[in-house]
Image 1 (cartoon, one colour):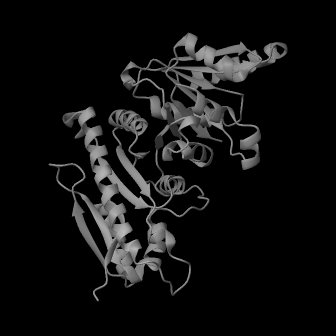
Image 2 (spheres, one colour):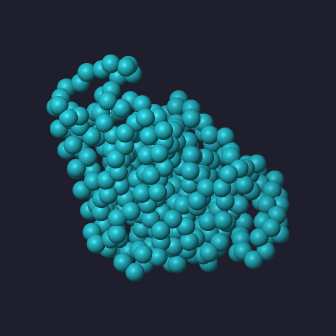
Image 3 (cartoon, helix red, strand yellow):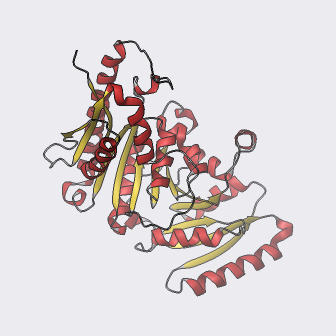
Length: 368
């Protein structure tokens, strides 16, 4: 009986060709099959197919190729600048795609669209040399792959149509469809490939079944690159219409590093940056002194940029921030978050998590 070829990943041709060479170096037969994700466009995206018997060895090579879920230390090599956009085919994911595309067009970088799905074969293979599985999984695998590819094509075609063909063609794009778990795959790819920014939708606590919504917090806490979260109820706006970004500071030692990254993203745009500290009434003098010192440093470092530093008081940090955002018509809220363990996340949610799931303002997060 002829052994069946199975798809392990969908990649741009250049990446697929490199993966093919790595697989064949380990004596794993590999075929590349071209597909069209956008009708009428020249295909540069392919399915990577292998024999079932090579599945276990091939998956380990694929994981290393795209980025294994390990702690990644800073590396000095330069990767191609790009923005990573995880998609789950939801309406909110469309908002994230349009925002990412808008930023990429100004920064002149590539956009990488990624979707992860559960493969009934790959994710049922035990860790042993000899294994058995229900033959019906083959049919399920084929149906899952077919459904995902169709949904991805329809999603990208819709987003491209909303953006407009002429504008769409001005930005380089890549498409990755991979079996796996979204939270792991997003972080692995971003860290391995040094993504400049991750843009994804957060769908709120009421939409717990939504894949992107359920992993937004994990990406937010664990990503070592900036993360832009687009809330479910955020208005659809072009970046050219944005006028103010708010950086919420608690006078952390990492603030200036975060502001450097923020300015690197905002430099093509005519957007005013407001640094805000919410303090207690009895600590105004010391907070004001530190805020003025911060303002002096920023004015000296970014002489051509428009900066403002403000101090407000309030008993409830979240309420004070939301009130300021509404009064000042802030377009993006930016802040630094620290990695927290699971217990502290459950019993003492951070400001970033609260704003991500309760606000309507896009949230740009830097990891300290």
